Image 1 (cartoon, rainbow, N blue to C red):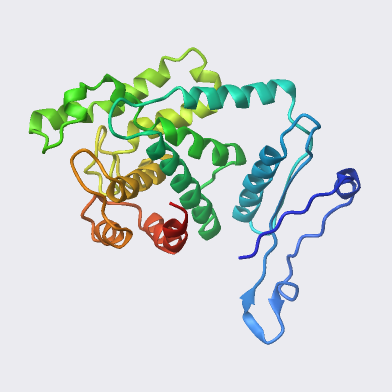
Image 2: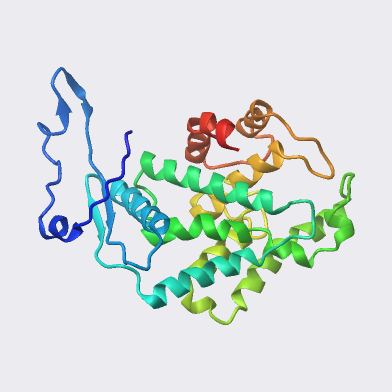
Length: 287
């Protein structure tokens, strides 16, 4: 796959033209390579004068993956962000940044989870169109991943930071952080009107569910688990294995991958395991 960005000072001329979509078999194959099919996916935005360039590029990138999921589609955001939309995005970021955990999982863990979630999600959308994920959800899932363990602020620090093995009773207390976090998010005043918080609720509540139905708190199985929670669950496990904790040393990337693929750390969606395997070289370079 090849990706590139193009900037133009006169986007109206491009928008006014009807873009051509590659669709016929003749146009999507290369001479001498009949089994190699080409596709074109475009995400485009019109940047307002007050919109940061980096944010506009990120929105265009998200739209491109939405187009890719629809096969040879073009997705265009037809206008710059309004003042209300810009303020809402800033509010979302502030809601995420206020979360600081009292345990050993520092802000670096939150950053890793967000980066891992984004990479796995992007690759999933390249591999399949089975999951109907909008451009807004593509933005919200990595951002909301930072709130996956917000319920841990209700857990006793002596249990959170215990260097040794947890007792059965202590583990039962730890397990309550999923529902505690979900309930905290649901009680927020603007929950019903804010898709980001609704995504964060799904992740906080269900990121410890397992593909085989043996997780908690609800014992969901397979794709009954929201895909957002499935992705964050896998990202969380990988980062927990490869990071130092008060109760363990960091495992190498190779050891972590072997443990995950062998089912030693839970049961995951096989397609997400493929995604993690496909991007592992990139993970080693950037994390």
